[in-house]
Image (cartoon, rainbow, N blue to C red):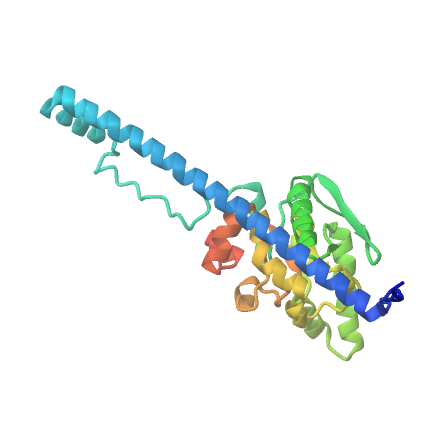
Length: 298
């Protein structure tokens, strides 16, 4: 009878090895989801190209049939039809600028800054967009709730947990925050005028803050819910993700690093503003701030 070998015992994994294995699984899942999104986008593109080819083939066949039936008369008729459908050459109307907003008066493009205060009695219809341990339940314009939630879900699918740290503020809340910061500067030895100017670099005066529109929100990663809001946060993975993907959901980085002389506000890598998907993508592609996009840099 042969001697049986004792069963091999596997060494149990250490906590560090288990953590590394879990991280590898998480990264693989993120890569898989990204690959699936690219795959579906590729299929959609192929479908669109196929549809365009079919439409083009249809019109080619139709045109060929027309030429066979009518010869030159058909060609003349087609030319007349094109001429009739074309705008008059002498109309003098300029072509629409594809880089400009289609509707500058759209509710999502309301401009709020030091020289453009909110209209008297402005009061957005609010909806809850979640809560956090620092500032409690947060609210935004009800029309922004769905795109914000979609953006947060997309980030989570990529392994990034976003939090709406501070969203809508009433004029009274903005007044309290503004005066509190100004007083801090005064306590540091600044004069009233110096403290006011310093505060305006970080907080807009009551009545001119985007937070009062219900369209703006300070977004951070969950781990930074209590972090000091400083410019170096732009290096965080959540800040990088927002810069790359926020326009897909209608949001723009409102206070850009190289536009402070126009916006009047310091660079804030956490402050995002809803303007709608079409306008957000135009603004981002051009590298302009909202004031420049609307042609209101006075």
